[in-house]
View 1 (cartoon, helix red, strand yellow):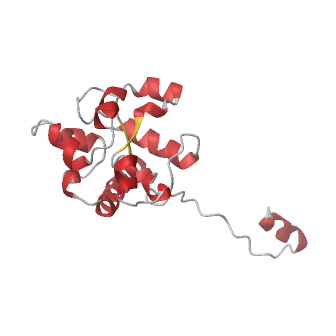
View 2: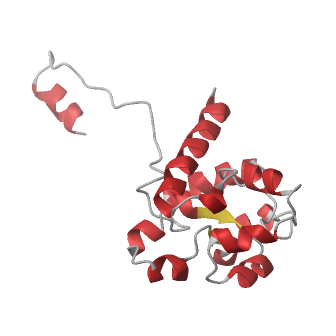
Length: 164
């Protein structure tokens, strides 16, 4: 709008077009099922046809997307676990800390750290489940900040692959 008004005042105004690149900030963006960045993450995760991390059950993303069920979105590093470590709510709710998970698996995990709950995944299935969730293969051995950095790389690579 500002550019249009400037053009109206001066027909020789050098019109500045907005960037055609829309970028989701997976690290600093916070998850809320209603905001655009969260919806972009949900669509990206949906494109992977994810399986729930513990059980390997196919997450019925059609149902999740229709209902907007908050119970199917999971903090990979659980909120209670991170709060106990003194991590702020804003950092806890980073888009990079969210994946799909069945309600049963989410209830099983509760406040356990990934180093604990990921050890329950059969070794031969772990790479597949983590890959489909766009999580680093070594998630259980990473600290939270390291995990966020590595996951952002995977999320951005997946976006690039979809848009190329």
